[in-house]
Image (cartoon, rainbow, N blue to C red; front, side, top):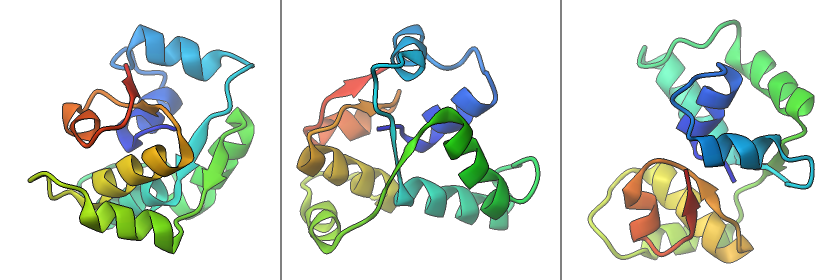
Length: 125
């Protein structure tokens, strides 16, 4: 599952994306999930001016996901409850939700953020 910055780096073909992460995303044998929390985070950051996203994010993001074969991962009440109950001082609701989804769905999170791994899920960068 991609953390938000990993998805953005992938779509921008950025050298900031870790080599192991790039290889895993590009591997045809990998199923890559993108959380609804990532869509929410991108839309929020575009709205408040913290992220420039070429084109209309609401229209462009689904087409990028489809082009790259990324699977959407909806947010369930189980995910939300786990996110809200995770130990730790990290307060970012998007990161908490991504970590909770990864733990429940047994997914590896592609992220460079050590806080996500601190919640107890496996990460790759």
